[in-house]
Length: 261
Picture (cartoon, one colour):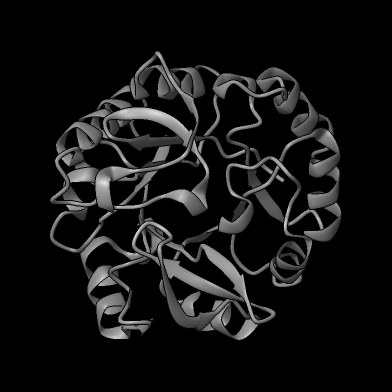
């Protein structure tokens, strides 16, 4: 298990939000924390501590009145830590290069691939050709419905017809270097992890997978390690003291280091 930090940017500010509350209409989100520092501050902190592979997420869509401010924050973070972080939010083959050139190690994609409720493999092929498999992360963030975990797009607002299964992970593994998966129903709530989802992801183990959502305590980290068979990387957002939570950032780093296999 590796710790993968996050920088979520909404309306031009670094924030932690309740994932299921996000709405494009009115640029609304229920906020857990709004940072006084900019995104570059957090990127510089992660660089100082040598933590790689975290993600920067732009939570405003292109066309939003806040998009340019949000993008500027993301670019500042990439400049502060070149090669150290991934970036996602509105990524397409036409704009991916500008984020990679700005310092992103990978681009993270959901909505361009999962359009109209299904996977568009032609779009996947375009992305793979544009950036290379080794620089592409597929975001399979999901919400539970009718006993399955359905992939959601458009900033977690729209359900697709695709569910997270071992077969899906296999079919997409030729296109991506890693997967990023938010358990959206518990994202930003620090109320415990989705153990069934963690168990499913942990049983696969063929590519790096980062799990995010619901971590609120060190007990939750133990639970994730158990259900994920020590194969999942972890993101902690609202529960981290950097974002107003109770879990000390330095203690999290020490826990991950002390339990490394």
